Image (cartoon, rainbow, N blue to C red; front, side, top):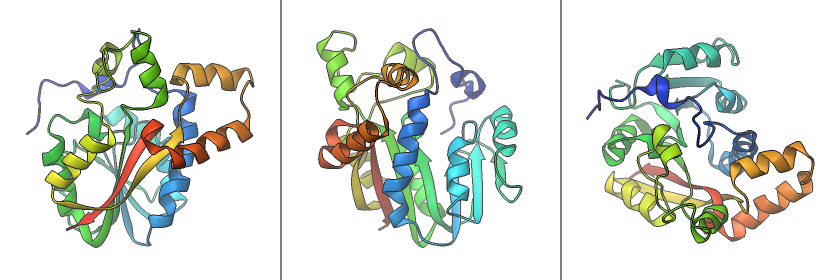
Length: 245
């Protein structure tokens, strides 16, 4: 299952086409936590892929027992400095990690689109869930309004295209609600909830500029979040809350 030709340490580096992480990404992740937290229960949590640990910090606000699987050791070193010493880090890929079926919450956030064999990986995650555990899958949305505008401008071939910059960052596909549901169901998971997070009229770099120059304020961001719940298919990210069938 493992693709040994991949260099995970190189994939998270910024490239000429795009940054790996924008300030806007962290804005959306805070709204993501607001969306998903009503589905949290007490128990053991697992994060799959932590980057530099900013989202890991958010999970520690909700879970006392948190483990993290990360393929890049240098990212683990950065993340460790940001979270309590009780957080356990496992240096492994998702495809090779050996874990017990004890997790009450598993978080796969903006990671599924990087995997070479997403259905097989989701099947492994299903096996790591406790009987009543939940898998939270969040991916960038192919049909985000900003992406559809880019298609109309001729900057992207199609909503679901993987751009050169995304490919350099390890993306293997660009999900929409229907294709995400397809892969989740093929993995034998039961969908308990689904939706979108944050209506997205601008590209990430445009949002960063708007935020830097204070052209948009918190009220505008909150409005985009509320509109995303009304129009999930136009949101920045889409999510599914899944359980074992």
